[in-house]
Each structure stands twice: as C-alpha cells, then as structure tokens.
Image 1 (cartoon, one colour):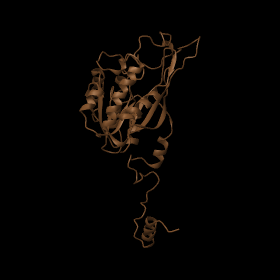
Image 2 (tube, helix red, strand yellow):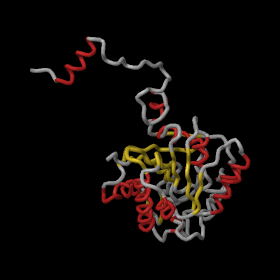
Image 3 (spheres, helix red, strand yellow):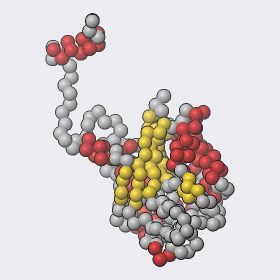
Image 4 (cartoon, helix red, strand yellow):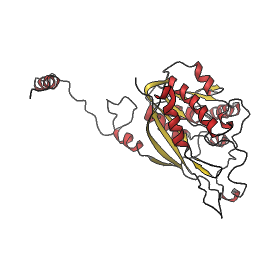
Length: 305
C-alpha cells in the first residue's frame, strides 16, 4: 500500500530535523495545547469526577448572602469558572441572586469578567453590601430586570461561559412540610423566595409554565454564548403533589430543543452534595418522601458551527 502523503511528509521532516519539537512541560504545569482553561492535567482530571461534596467555610459576606435561600457559594462558582474559562474571558449569570457567580469570578486566579442579571432589587442590594464589606473583591457588572429581556440587549456570541441557577422549586401555596421540621433544621434561612416582580419565573403558575419560561431563557443564552463554549445549570429535582419530578432531565431536554431543535448538547452532569443540608420529616410516619439533599450541575455545550 502507498503511504499516506501527509504522513510521509511529516516523517520526512522529522528525519531531516525540520519538524517543530513537542513542547516539554513538567507535571503540574498547564498543557500548552489547553485552550479551555489554565488547569494542570491533575486538576483537570479531578474536576471531571461526576460527584462532588463540599463544605465551604462561611466567607464572602455569607451572613448577608444567606438571606437568599438558594445562594450559590462563591467557592463553588470559582471552581466551575476556572474550569470553563481562561483569564480575561466573560461569564454570565442570568439568575444572579446575591452575586455568588460574580464573586466567584472575582476570586478566580486570575480573575474573570462577570455579568449578572437579577430581577429582584433586594438581592442586588445584598450583593452591593457584600462588596462594601470586601473592598478587595472587584465588582461584577449587575443588571436589574427579567433576564429574558435584558439578554435581548446583549450582542450575539459575547460570552465565554454561562452559569445558571434557575428557581427550580416553584412557589406553591402548600409545601411538603407544615412546621414539624423546625427541631431538625441546621441552616438559618426560611427559603422564602417569593417576590412580586413581574416576570419572576419563581412565580410560574405551574411546572409546564416554568419549563416554557426556561425555554425562553435558554434561547437567549444560546444566542449570547460563543460557539463551542459551555453553560452549566445548577438545579435540584422536586417533589410536588405526591410525585417526584426529574427536573434536571426536563431542563436538559428544554435546553436541547432551542434553536429549532439544534440547541445545547448535553455533555454530562455533576451531582453536588453540600454537607450540612437540613433534613425534614416529610412523610413520617406514614409514607416515604425523599429529603433531596443533592443538586445537579448540568454541563451543556453550544455547538461550534
């Protein structure tokens, strides 16, 4: 068989000493071929585990941020941002809350640029208070409003990474528990996330309405994210009206259906357990009702077309 012309050319160059040498680097160094992040091979490998347990210390204004029942630990967001971005790249959080993603971007090594959108002015004020108490942390760019509308003002392909933490448990009038849980609680928040803001997805009338709204969010996320880059969605499954809801699977499906069915590509998930999550005696002593103490971090990619 005749040798491949391209392979023959490469071998000829090597034999004549013309080919560029393979760059050398030591263990722990960043691979020069790495275009995604600044991690070493060991750090990259460790991140790819599909289960993570965290117990972060109370820091970065936690005494203020805990007013928000679903505040994202800046340390967690730092880990995600450092894997999916490089220095100087832009991060978007369409559900910024009290600024966990923006704080995480600022404490990255080196820091990244961040933009957040939050519909409730109360949580933006908390973020500002956190910054006042930590002048060493650079402020991210925070916008007030419905993320579906605010993102329409942003340019196509203008972000390198998106981290979304949608309001995945709707504000139903009746919860699974009616006060019996108080002796067992070990977290100091009432998880009251209800707002009166028009367009707040947390106030969707039902689960189908919530999924429709998330489709609108993902449509804009898809547009503003650069091709080939990643979006993570942090969410917890739900238990409502006597049924377990696989929210993470529904959200993944919705993300794939945007852009005329040629939307985000599912790339994986991480199961995140935050140590110390409180337990509630939901079904005791009559029926099994789960304490959902883990969350999913869905990893989705925009096709590079």
